[in-house]
Length: 241
Image (cartoon, rainbow, N blue to C red):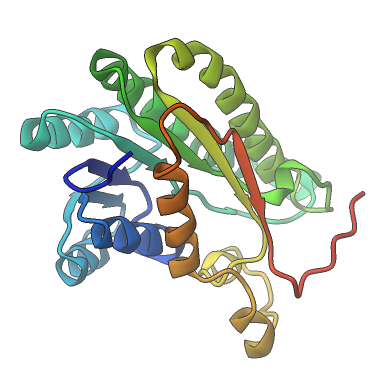
């Protein structure tokens, strides 16, 4: 895909990986839209990156309808959807979680992505082009105490993407899952995990580096597909369960 002039939508675009992805796509002359729940932060980042924005909560179907309506009214197409928004909600043993904790984790890390994919895919099928990229987590592959619900949601995203590839392949719509590990984002602080220290954080994947990776995935020759990319920092030990 030649990215110049293409229309891209990045969820969770006001911080972390989302911000890095939006900036990288803008640098390729895409028409970029970002979404998020914090309207002030969203507006500030949109002005800084010179991109468009729509305030939205991905767990609400009506918000997805509003976002896609705004994008289609402006561009009459959507070429790239990056499902980046997500949250740890709470990281603790399942028996210590509430029903609401579980619901929120599944909604923001799985169900909200499904709402977006099903809507964007309808337009992409009509266009006979497009790419959907889901940002997952190595938690989909490993099992750690406290991460059970989050891991289940991310595993669901990866299986869904594989199935969706087979549904959309005949329509020339690509589906890719990017599976990162430690990243220099606000994820750990948001769910109450301790910081790993400045030296380690500096060696984690940076938001701009994630953006560069997304650009590479999007510019892969159209007759090829990258089903999944797993990436993690050299500073992290690989110790599978």
